[in-house]
Length: 296
Image (cartoon, rainbow, N blue to C red; front, top):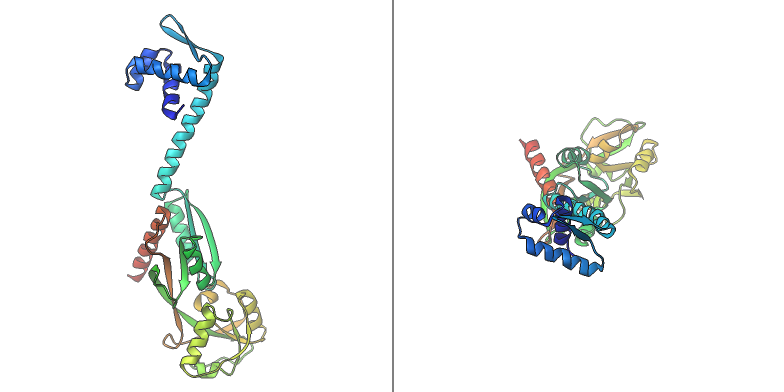
């Protein structure tokens, strides 16, 4: 049996006559009778008996009608859900975000949720290099990462350029001038990342560019712990602006580092020449519109 035959049977039961069911289905009566006979042969059970011009249904027929209704309903639900997923109305948005850079993601997700309330979310947080690998492996479709990285295999939307800040405890004497890397290199630095990754690389690259050697006393990928260490005078640090926005309330002082000395571009990436779900495409469109509106 297939779903078409089950729908034929539903019509026969609900109309009570082969002729009326045939009229409802817009087919001729003989083929409909043949379908009923084929179903009975396949099931090895009598489904209906004629009573004059009407039909009475056996217990087997009544049982089949019950399941036919359920299967037809499931088929309609499946068609609706597949169509919604195809349109991006339903489905899952799988996205990665850099450990130290959220770029207003909660605000953007709220906007997306208003437009697509049935969408569910899979959000992973990690370093940019790891996020690129997750996109390659198709574990997430999209990722918000910190540049520069080798992105030849990805499509990318540049979102914004983020400044960095030098932070110290409130116990330190406030600075009355713009901070330079030359001054910072003599301070005990806690780097907000681990060696070879993301922010760690950007900070060391900036010092190297000016032929300076920073006094690194610690690495710490937990920003809340880093803020606690800085606020208690364990050391100083250099953090991206997002970290200051996300971890407020610590007794620290923050000094902006000139953008030409140290800054980072933030971008949204996805794999080139690979299938992208409609949900992901809708999110990219929202990001583009959000970015365009904010730049005007």
